[in-house]
Amino acid sequence: QQQVKQSPQSLIVQKGGISIINCAYENTAFDYFPWYQQFPGKGPALLIAIRPDVSEKKEGRFTISFNKSAKQFSLHIMDSQPGDSATYFCAASLGAGNMLTFGGGTRLMVKP
Amino acid sequence: EAGVTQFPSHSVIEKGQTVTLRCDPISGHDNLYWYRRVMGKEIKFLLHFVKESKQDESGMPNNRFLAERTGGTYSTLKVQPAELEDSGVYFCASSRLGSYNEQFFGPGTRLTVL
Image (cartoon, rainbow over all chains, first blue to last red):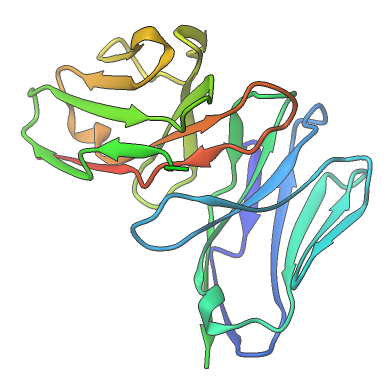
């Protein structure tokens, strides 16, 4: 059973548009929700993360929205750029320093 | 500061052979994790070291996989004997001890078992 479900699997957005990726989780004990960005040939790199005590976190063009009651969180990329084209993974973990449970990934392509 | 390094970057072996993957974490990072991504699916946890001790190995698929972390520094993941379903990208990640510290990932080792 996949504990973190991510959608869509792929996404094409025009330059300047908003990219939205959604994740839903099962385990209500998860208390850390990071998003990772991966470029081809590289490992995933932390983009932005949120704890469940806040409903939104913004860093530059990247925003996480978190809905604890619905057990969902999403990544919004504002003013999407071709350089944002990558695979994005949502994840969740239980407690400090523990394993990450990943969603299936979203391949984002931003067209010029 | 050097990042997490993994060796080799690619490995192609025959079914039944043995392969050993190596991970060098960021200096000072006591947490070391192994993950695997199989054929476009989600990245799955394999195991977690704290220094030289196995903290959690609940994700190890079977006893054909053996992980070690010598002296709490680099780690190796041995697959013996390799099966076709072991093909995938193996990632290593490291982090400092403490609350919610970022896990830094290596570039991965792409393993192909023929």
